[in-house]
Amino acid sequence: MCRIKHLVDGSIEHYKACLFARGFTQQEGIAYFETLSPVIKQVIVRLIFSIAVSRNWKVQQLDIYNAFLNGILIEEDMKQPLGFVNSTLPSHGCQLHKSLYGLKQVPRAWYTCLSDFLLSIGFQASKVDTSLFILSDDTNIFYLLVYVDDILLTGRNSAILHRLIQLLSSEFKLRDLSAIHYFLGIKV
Image 1 (cartoon, one colour):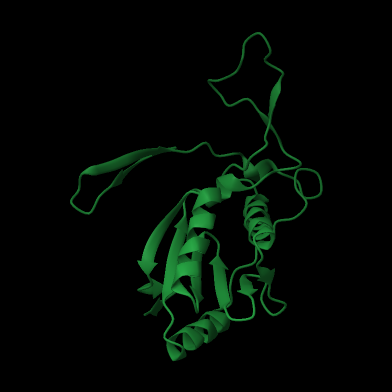
Image 2 (cartoon, rainbow, N blue to C red; image 1 turned 30 degrees about the vertical axis):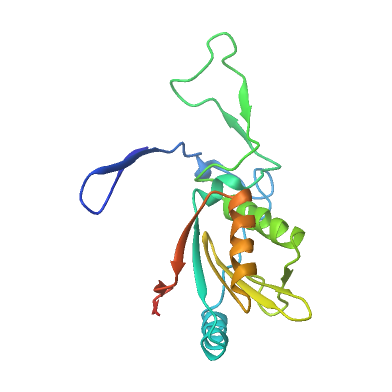
């Protein structure tokens, strides 16, 4: 599939091409095992907004580019795409190491990848909502909320907040949308 992404003025920003896997042919327990990808609950979003407003904290919004392509697959083989078949080895397939759009386990693979990274830099997953990650020490606390590829980050110390964004951007290609204006139907 190919798409052209335009800027607001109508000029071309970039071209997008996607290779989709035939996820409809997958069989549960054979081609994939886990598909669940948790997303932040609306009540938690409102709670964190309330905390941030009451403490006068900035809320930063981030968007991960091609988030699903970051996940690591453990169980997927794929036939060679039509038009790309190696005529000398037509029966050979492809071993997927990274996720492809269309596979049922891709959202879970992405969430696992992000979660593992956040845990490795000191965040802890909330027991109340697994899409809420908390980083705290004696003087600072930070909240990171995940809704698929959209992330909200807030906390007490702006310098550390920006350092956390730098850490995330060193691991994932992301767009810093700056201070939040709109998230999950909530206008801020």
